[in-house]
Amino acid sequence: TVDSTTPNATVIDKNTTNPTIPDSNNGGGKKILAADGKTATSKTTAKIGDTVPFQFKFNATNFVTANGVTKQIKSYTIADTPTALTINQDSVAVKVGTQTLVKGTDYTVAFDNTGKMTVVLKWIKDDKSTIYNSPIEVNVTYSAVVTKEAKEGQATNTATLGYNSFDPTNPTDPNHPDTPDTPVDPKNPEDNKTTVTTHRFTLKKTNDAGETLTGAEFKLYDALSGGAEIKVVKDGDAYRVAEANETGVVIEAGEVVIKGLKHSTTYYLEEMKAPNGYNILTERQSIEVK
Image 1 (cartoon, helix red, strand yellow):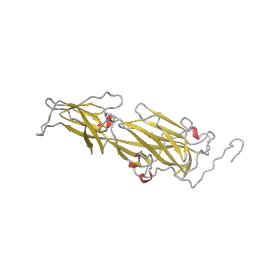
Image 2 (tube, one colour):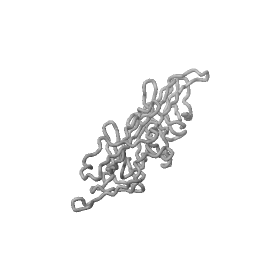
Image 3 (cartoon, rainbow, N blue to C red):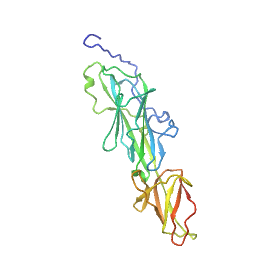
Image 4 (cartoon, one colour):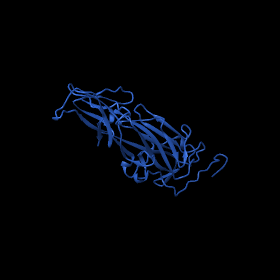
């Protein structure tokens, strides 16, 4: 009933579908974006310090029906607690359908002291009417930097989706949100999980007889000539790729392991100092991590 005391009425579509997470074949849930910005996958490889782009895709509805009771959705929440990754806080973007949302107006982003990201999408107007068509695709994109914690092989992360709903026939109900949000789970739990792998190689300096030589020093590069140095730091008896705020060191060999590298990638070692009695190598030596 619409009257002077309740001037707004909500029309509920009884045929509405509930919010869902599409399967992996349709890019649903949390995924890693390929270089083309379109192809989505659950697994990739990177080195420490690389930036990895992610997306979280789901199908949103304005109403949800459970156990014969239909409620209106007030907000959606996407949460991601990264492991061996640091989310770039300014990288978050949200699209609903073809509309790019405005941070602070249409959604909020918060990070706690563990690095956990929480994105809350506003889903009703102040008068409690709906904002978007239903159902509609939502795509949240963001990026993260691979940290030194990934040095031993992989970083596996899971994101979650939930919604907050209320009884549209009760004018006060939006003031009493669900605690916690009602989760929306994919059919396959793996669809909300991504894995970033890092890899290693062993550097061994030998003579013609295959005997290990000590006293050599190397630096690591991404090109046969020129290019950028890939800085490393000591990690116990091994070395790992340095983070951006760390000062690199030379690689001393002998025989050592270098960790935190990208798979299927060619790196180049430049000898900076030769063992006693030997000449420095005249060109960089290629190493394919595979």
